[in-house]
Length: 339
Image (cartoon, rainbow, N blue to C red; front, side, top):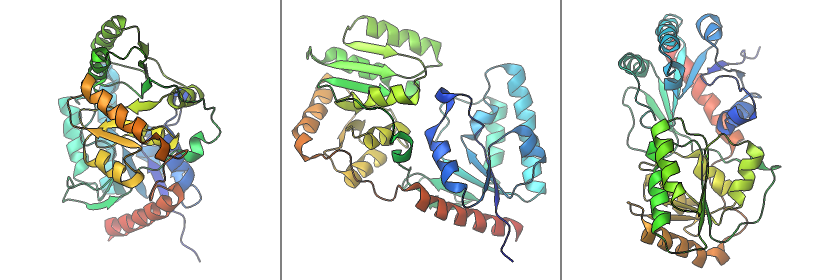
């Protein structure tokens, strides 16, 4: 008799409409379904459902509500979840999408996340890193590509001089620095589109003030459906992602999947991707970004344009192959947790 399928509770919640869909979580779920029983997160399922593995992604999102009462209720439920996981000897796996949360958690939330850290048995990193936690087993699973998700999305020809920055806008992504770098450029043909929602009101006001002073900048600070996002990204001569710290970026992988070169700061991830797909696809620079640095990066990409094909060749980013490895991690985690 074959063993019953593993039951895995993913910590991402059900989708709510097209603009709320995260391609990463959907592609992960799709690749895992033929290999194990996958459930998305709800509090009733987490506290009373039957599952063998809790796979955490961005756990701070579960307890990061800005409204005080909802956040307090979520913190209580999260504390109960930690008890349930311990008592029922549920294996806990966590994918490290960011070294630090994007938003600073409250004192109570930070304490709960530290408590979670003590029961994580396996951590999955998205590229080689020395920043591993000795309390758990470490695995490296490169971020998968977006071929399947965007294969049928509409695309448009690249427009010379058009730069694009896309994705949810956070302060650490240094979009204000990008706007200042464009403002320093004397190139009248340069255009910049910034597409993505922003939740920081102060940051939004800063960006709008900078954009108002430069007619070459087009701000679209709102959620962008996938079809429109595909058009925006493929319209770019280059995608610019000037993050202050670059550990992981789905936007970077998406731009490359859609066949558009990228400009990123020098980092372990940026240098590693340049080695993987070629420096004709990934132009790196030494921060800070300014008009001269931006111009040099664009010139490097333009000089290499004839070397590029329709899209780069990725290494080890196939979702099905990664799903096979991930299920093996799940099984080993369950065996280790239950002794």
